[in-house]
Length: 184
Image 1 (cartoon, rainbow, N blue to C red):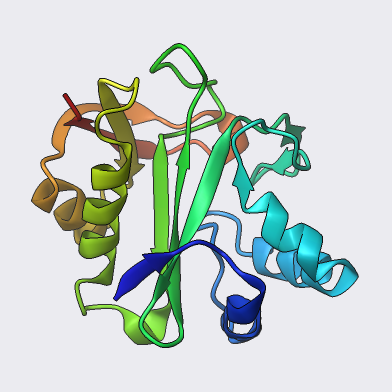
Image 2 (image 1 turned 45 degrees about the vertical axis):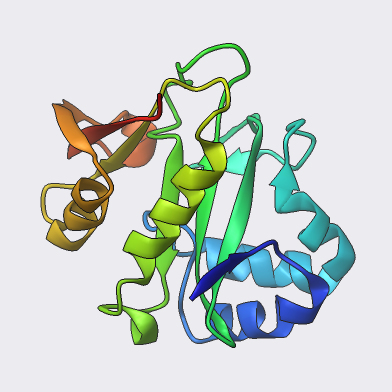
């Protein structure tokens, strides 16, 4: 498995995963439907918006239906000859702080038929290698207490739990765990 930049030649495999029921958003499954509509409307624009360091893309829909301005970020795709999942990195320039609606700097999701192969662990390691040496001293990643697989992925990449917190209402409330990975 490798991380690839989203490209038009990979788009059919990505769209097939969306049609099979996978969503890049763990808490908002309807994102799959929204992304399929965006791909159909303009596939070239969809690919371009996957790498958005200037936050020029569309507003971000939260699980409660509200929308918020996008922050800088990009998405890489997990690839083993076909689409396996995605991992995203987002930040606010000049700080490690994130807006309250953004639960962490990194989010990832593996398609169900490719899970338990170590893809998420490897994808996170590769992404961390890419961002080390930049301006960020650390990244925060969150998961829910009932997701031991995600917790293992984070811990295997050096993540240390720093807190248990309650998610904002826009994310449905509920408990979550915040992990920190030191980059420097």
